[in-house]
Length: 450
Image (cartoon, rainbow, N blue to C red):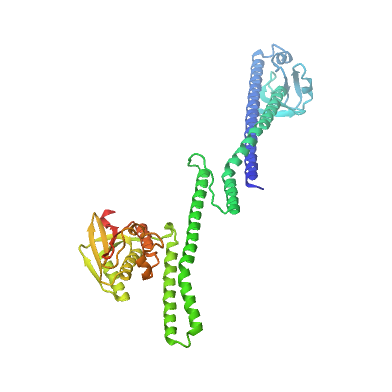
């Protein structure tokens, strides 16, 4: 069964059941109230008859007196202690009450009884008769009119229940459509996505805070994320296929050369192996950078901590100096503490120092200073520099100036550095002049500024 039909069925059954329960409670409460009222009325009539009998003290025959007080739809009977009737008087058209069974009651009795399927109010009160004996004054009243009214009430409530079922069914259908419409829209949208291969969104009405709107909004946000990740995947595949083509071609060429002449020419063998090894390392570095850049911004795991910048940069410079055997001079103008992710900051500094190593032969200078309530890390080289026309585009993926191409860069380092800085709340600035060198700056928030 479809969810919409299930909601429709369950809601309808629930509302109709609740309606029947309410109407049953109304009928039961009203019937008990009206029957209790009739029983009290019969009790008052019995007490009035008993009072009249006491006042006459035998001056008026009992049958005549009882005939004056007999209820319009009832009967009055005096019952002896031995169970025989002393006298019985019935109203007109109520002679059938003569045949009703009777008995002497030891105590006062009040109840609703049924004779021939018709309710009667019955009251029995002990009293002292004229001869000094204890007798029962029994008053019985026909409640057929009350029963007819209750049957009318039953019919009215039944008709009301049937009539009320119609809007209940309609409203339950509308409710089920309202609840399942976003789900149906999502199913239809996903089917269209599967058929067309294009990411689509659910059309949402005016902004609301109800759960159905939030469901559609969440679905659209998920589609945005999937589309963005799909685009990144396509970009990764495209970039990887484009950038890996050159080193693979070189490796293939040298491998073919080795197959043809490697055994006869040892110097050619060494050259080919060195070239293949170099290109393999370049491919490894390229793939690592591509995988990092393929991450969506929300997938970066950031662990922001307080960092004493001087000690941190000293350790990074020492590791870089030993790893690449390049002279790096560290200049600390002011001791500062920052807020950053230590692993990402270290990677960021290494990227900038690695660029300085690739594109300069002189000493690399690293400087720590404070400016504009920020900590600034500068990586300075005196190398080939970046032309002014290329400077605005150096953070684009795979963009390389002509000099950089000759140095074997991928055009991914600064793009990765920019993303690392952004996820930490830092900023990268570049100042460069062609032929004079480059100033790469990392601007970081101070601990006191947060």
